[in-house]
Length: 539
Image 1: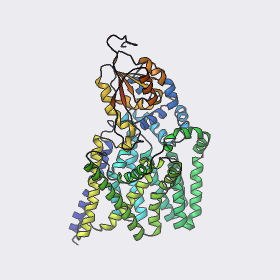
Image 2: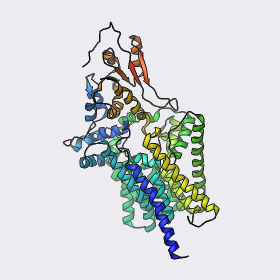
Image 3: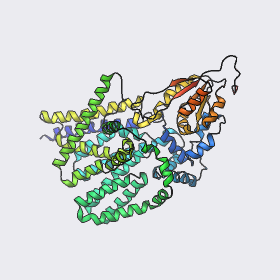
Image 4: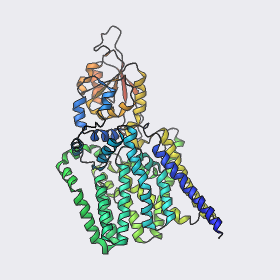
């Protein structure tokens, strides 16, 4: 072949690779501060600031008049705060491994407080994941084409872009999962002590990032036992070393089992089998296709379901091809990514009637495994992107289609974050808009709503006044002359208002996708009659 033609083809390849990657970087940085700072991100800020939900509830739920700035201040890291305060707060949240929160505290001390600042750390971790994925693909498939396709798909994946913009550990977790995989493959290939030591360190970092990494570590042990039996002892030594490095936090978990149980109550809330199945399928589809779920008109919803079903079918077909066309030491490594986490979580949910396996953020290893599978499959079906018969052009079109769907999904996310991503906090902008339209409004809330109030405080105008109190005392301010709102009142609180003859008007109530979906609501207290004296005058 003419070398000049080769050069031109390679330049075309470079542009094809560069454009999606550059778009992926753009999507990670755009609107970094504008998106909803949801309740879990508030928990990150609170822990870094050296406090806990219980302490904040005790501090704020006194019935005293609070300002929006007051709620914002308790989420800020103060320079004089000792590290011991942050460690103490993390101690009372044993379900979350501490590494990300400590790194985030260090990052904020360098960059200053702010939503963009704290989220930029996750962007950094997400960008670092791109070369680490390339390394992992090189170690596993020994194919530059597969590696680049994997990097492209990760760059524009709406799922990984969404978590790259969140002040939570999941972007760091995806990075550490890739590091665990790449260092393991290097260790079994070189059989050198230093590489097994590197794997042990990567595994320890993974454990300090997420407790669920322990399941991935166990899956990798099964992989080594089945495919590299002569190196089983090396893996055991590395795993023991990683667990020993992690042992200080194991001690924290054992000493805080009751707290851990209380902090994870949501994982044991019942969810029907059909919603669980739908969520599992949806979790796979959002790797490439993530647009707002539409119930009406039905034809749009059916189109979304059809696209999701096609994508999941493609994933299953690609997995079959991977198993058929690669040695066991290749396909089993990918299957470990697929199965090590969801299998035990699904079994737990089926027996405990819980919903742990339905949280997409816990499925990071699964989606990384899917991405590896698709990257290999398309690389195998597209040996040359620029001279081919129809079949190769078809699969080139599939690759372009996946990239296009992913980019469109990222564009949708610029307007509205995903429902699975922000959960109930997705209602914050709509609720804040209603409150902000009122003149000097008063916002009442029960003590149980402290964290959600901290989340919505980022969207409220400074003039909003807030009172947080136990349900039985919220009634004290119901006859205020101010425009008074109830933030997400419980059923017992609404019943108390009804018993006192105080009318409530529903100002915001989202339509749930499933009956058990958690959501936020806003109610307005009907104004006092003209001849009725206000209980509390405007302050």
